[in-house]
Structures are given as C-alpha cells and as structure tokens.
Image: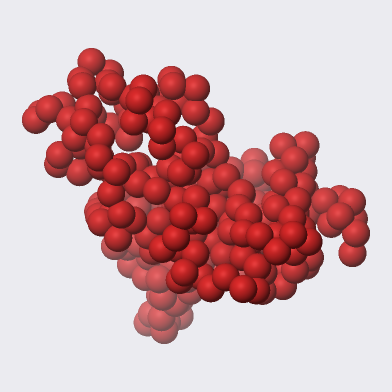
Length: 265
C-alpha cells in the first residue's frame, strides 16, 4: 500500500495526517539509509494510531520507548539490522535522556508547573517525555537534543530556583498514582455499561459521552456504546480520566456479569 493510501486510511484529521507522515518518513529513512531514526514523543492516542499504521506498512518494525517501562509518553525508534536494541539504549544514538530537578523544600510544584516552565523556554511538547514528581522535585525525560538548552537556560519553575543533574535512564523512579479498585455487575460488558461502572456515572451519561466522541478504548476513538469491552482494555474519557477493566469474572446470583476495574485518580 502506498504512502498516500496509508494516510488516507489511518489519518483522522489534518494533524493526524501530518503526524503519521512524519512516522512513515522516519521509518523509510532508517530503511533506506541504514541509520537509526526516531520520532518525537507521542501521546498514548498518537502511539495507538501510529501503531495501527505501522502494522499495515511495516509489521514488526519500530520500538516504542519512553525511558522506563510503562512510560506514558513514548517515541518510535527505527533501528537498522546492524544495531541491537540493547546497544542502542545504552549508546549515544539513543535520543532519550533524563534530568533530576531539585527544588527548595516545600515548593509543592505540580506537573503543570514543570510543563509550563519547560514550554516557556520555547520547547514543543514532542521534545518532552514524562515528568515524574518526587519529594525532592521531579525527574524529566527529554530528547537528548534539548539537553544543552535546559542545562543553560532552565533556572526556575515558577518563583522557585531549580538545580539540574543529568541522570541515567536506569535511575528514573516512577511513582504509581493513586488508584481505586471497583467491583461492579453489569448485564453485559458493553462499552456504555463498563464506562458507567468505571467512572461512577449513570449509564445514560456514559452513552452520551460515547456518542460525543469523548470516550476512547485503548486510546482509540470509539463511538459505539454496544462495543464489547475485554479484560485488559483501557478506557479514557476527557474530563473523567482513565480506568482499566482488569477482569471479567463469573456471574452474580441475578445472572449479571461481575467486573473488576481499576480507576486512576
């Protein structure tokens, strides 16, 4: 399938088409020149749509990397045959690097504070990976190309001074966010029922959100309220967050399906 046909099939809008074209360009560059290439950092939804594209264009090609297991923001890396993934991760060809950001005690800075400060330096979102908050401040994953800019120009977050130290990716310490375990019963594990249980909203409201395009399954848009949801599926909803269907159990005494869900708070 040609590039134009692939973009016509998988792009949802103009922005998506530009993103997918860049992903294809990096894959083709690695194939044709025999050099490692990569994209910028992508959101989970961008990763999902580009994964669908690559499955059609180049099955088995590309590595999603974000600096640590289960990173939310990740980039696609395309490696030539002569370069092993482990060697790439440990070498200068790897575009990922990390910074330890120390702030004064009691600063209480949020993810938004750090992100706003970084973008205030003129950096685009694709240059920035995950921001991991810690008691001392934060750890930030960025593209290696912007590291000199940060070390020379990033002096404050809000009114608080920061001290920056480059660290190996192995020293990243992600802290799991707060989660709520939910046990519910539904007539069937269709999307509107599972979303209602996972986000603690009426089923009619869940159906309305689905019709409005605000609910995604595994970071892909889904406008069908009766779509069957499977164990392991991730549901996201703008304004309500994320939940995961961990398990579809047996049936209750009333013949309803038992669900085990986990909502990210």
